[in-house]
Amino acid sequence: MTYPKPPSPATAIRRRGDCYLAACLTREILDHVFSRWGSLVLGALLERKKRYSELRDQIGGISEKMLAQTLRALERDGLIERRSFPVVPPHVEYLLTPLGRECAGRVGDLVDWIESHVRSLARAQADYDEAD
Amino acid sequence: MTYPKPPSPATAIRRRGDCYLAACLTREILDHVFSRWGSLVLGALLERKKRYSELRDQIGGISEKMLAQTLRALERDGLIERRSFPVVPPHVEYLLTPLGRECAGRVGDLVDWIESHVRSLARAQADYDEAD
DNA sequence: CAGTATCCTCATAGATACTG
DNA sequence: CAGTATCTATGAGGATACTG
Image 1: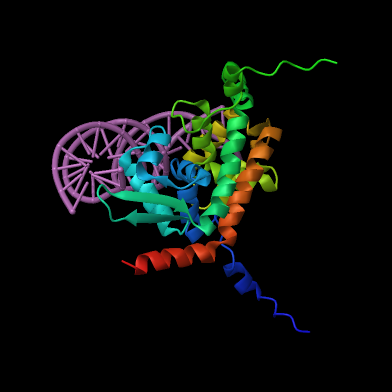
Image 2: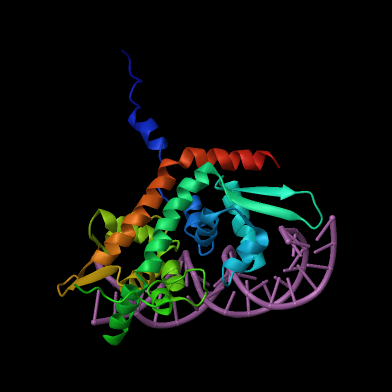
């Protein structure tokens, strides 16, 4: 019985990125996923596929420019898919790719944690502010 | 045997935040945790407590200004604790609070996912760029 | 060592108007 | 409906110098 040769150290390093290196590609992805709007877009699509206007209406405070820009970046990263139907008026759907679903699941966990711990977090802020 | 009264709908809503509302406190926390530097600081402290200079050296590209600012925000949110020792030269340690440990664990999962999927993500970008 | 203070710039992001 | 184009400006963020 044969096993695949274990990777050399150099190969092993390339198999995984390192977000702590400013020049690593993972840092760019991290900046998309961990961006003000990226996280909310991924979280919104976790529920189901959405149209452009649905996303715009759901995500409070986002501008059309930033929504388009965010969608484009995440599409380029292979996390979301854009489906355009050639009808009048235009109809476009955005949905998570299989890769995006894995990623968005973890984003959702984090967003969910924040939402369910809002009281503890608010208390911490109040304590901090009170102590000068 | 008595049970606590189930919360009214209004109370139930207040028990949890909603990051999709621009004015909700959770949006502010989300902006800290899902920030360019916040995520990397939380991830770095997941390993162990660190000194200011250790964090600065570990997180490629961060400026001292942004590190100080990020640490302050996360400390105010109750996610990290600052321990200052009155010695010369100064010695300051940063560590996760119990609340921060829960949060940072989820941040770490997401960072880890990105790092281990770097090749798929790079491939997706290349495909996207190639297709005009 | 662990910051703070100051200045500066340039990119992010908002507003508005327009279009296929 | 789903964007794009253009303009603007706010402030995030970097560089530098200084300090307890």
